[in-house]
Length: 168
Image 1 (cartoon, rainbow, N blue to C red):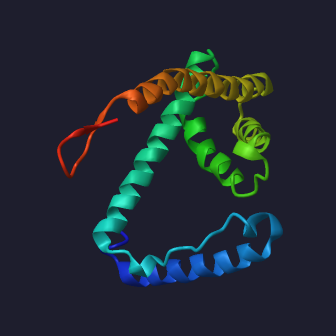
Image 2: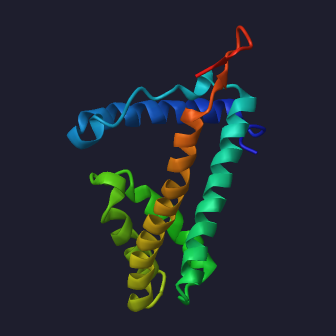
């Protein structure tokens, strides 16, 4: 929609804002090390921009769905609308998180967003702890499955693209 309603001017304005914020961010000691070079939005084509936009929207939908499923699995009475509204606020907390994986910042953000949205403090606390534990368990399960598969893949002979022969 923004592309059809003066999208070029919007891109230029967003590009200027992004470049300004990256210059300011590089001056902050805790953020400057994390910022690399910020790509210029005006160098992206419209098709690529639309694809990136759609992929980011799909990621957001999957993120909200994941948090809603966590609340459902934990048996908490949290509305999907509250989780939908809280997710962007929590994702913004990653901008100031100085701990690995946002440990502590993410939890505090979720607790604040849920209680601010009217959820019971007990439900918010259980959601915060439960989502962290469920995430750790799910990542551990994926690691337990992927490590043997990776090891097996390294042991299998691969075809050489040039000669068509097998090599170890």
